[in-house]
Length: 98
Image (cartoon, rainbow, N blue to C red):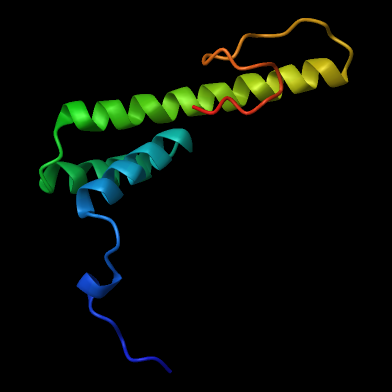
């Protein structure tokens, strides 16, 4: 069994970066309890409301792009010619690369 490492040895990303990633993940997964938990942690660590909002907005853009790409794939598979433009102007059924 490996000896336990202290928290600083495990830290690869700065706490701020990890918290902003968690904000984005909670937003993208629609997990309100996760968002509320990480929100308090983020505010306590000095992250601003503007930074939290921006991380959440980026996650929303990625989530929207994935949803549109899936909807277009469903339409294509059922023979519906109607498609929706991706928010980032990528081609239908392709990763939006947000």
